Length: 585
Ligand code: ADP
Ligand code: MG
Image (tube, rainbow, N blue to C red; front, side, top):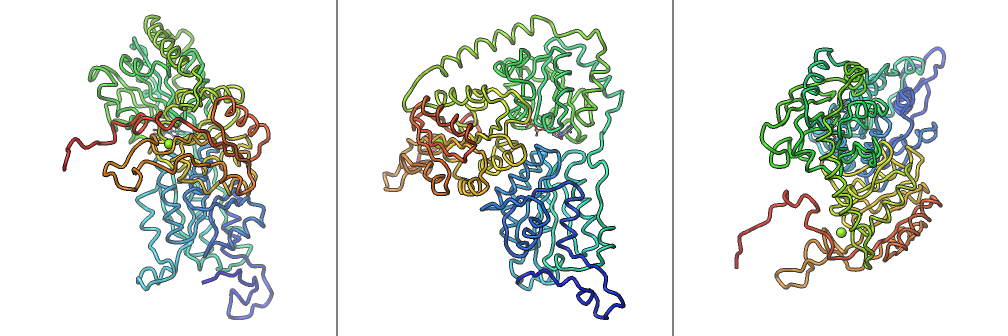
């Protein structure tokens, strides 16, 4: 089935010849007009039936169309574009299998509260609903629905404007998330009067309206906070997303309360800030008595707000700022829920704090500072080692220094040990510079995130990738070369998943399930597409290679040899990976 742009003549619209020729438009053009009207100018996708021509026409109209090699990575790029810009990132896919590939990214975006719109072509409704076996037949709308925030199908060209408006508003208002837009092949070719079509386009007014918290809720939060002896602030990626950077800083600094940044909230205030309790995390969680959650959820990443890491049961009170009311009490009682948008909520707290706000008792601040200094000194020792082959710390010491010197660079990070160690070693200095595996802790976001980071910010990107993690999206190095993006990928190559040292317990000839080809040269992949490949075995070589890449802006892949014995099982979440205690003959 091929879709051709229909002749834009009256005859195409009406069987009866009209008295005077009218200008016509069609589904393709209406969709492009609707996106542009809403300032959505970039599409991440994979071309194919029935959306190939749509991509061409979008590019011809001045939209940026970035084609990937696999829909999941295009979707991850769209999600990160949404996170960075507060506008829904667009992902375009073909039907059934392409749609399903993109759907993984849509579900991930929704889980992470990133706004994106997945647009997939689909087969003919009549045939799909009678299950008559159409080309790539699938009831995509039904499948998408439980996995995203909203899902819509458009059957008539005159509804495209309103459908895009609904999709935009659903993606960015309240808690942001993923939206699915189902576009049957037939829709693209539908024609209508151009003037009527233009009127059908809706530019969404105030797509993410401010949501002011109730004054009583702010007062309640301040009352709880005033009674605190050992308060703690936890900043999450919801605070980073909100782009309320000044207000976040004012709240933290005026309150004088130590704060912990969640992974993607690192840099909202510089990690070197004197109130950062990042290096005293265990103590801060355990000993605090009042915890202010600022755009962060009490999910698995924070042990659900209970258990050993949180100290004595019921030993603390939570204040939580979130735009989503049902997030409150998700895991533990929230003593002071503050529901609204980040900026309005923090502003209401700041207003209520007045001029004589009491900062926390010195005893608490000193305890945190002492712990932080001890832990940082211990870390410093590991970072100052010189080893060849490198271990995670010696390699990361080089990258830590590079990011210190280049605070505007975007950092993408995924892997197990590569993620865990990089998160604690590499300090971030500016908001929304760190992009990582997010709420699900998934592998495979790397190259999609790197492409979007480069396209949306224009900054150089450093992608720090475990060798396993890189493999999920590695083919996108071609995409990076094709668009000549300033992306420097460092593959931490330790020959396998977690480590490269596992052996086949049966003694058979297959290698262990976690082991890759030894001494692989990932750098050759980049060279295959005209990018720069580098192979480094020590810290100095790594530093030189990364600086060269960041200065030149040329697509670069650095194969960094890491001691194959230096990783730990599952990184820091080994406790989530059940291990058998039963031995069988
Ligand atoms: P982290 O993983 O960093 O802890 P989460 O993704 O778990 O962050 O939590 C982010 C929270 O921020 C979500 O509960 C989401 O509803 C909330 N959020 C997102 N945008 C805003 C906003 N503009 N204002 C307030 N809360 C927001
Ligand atoms: Mg590895």
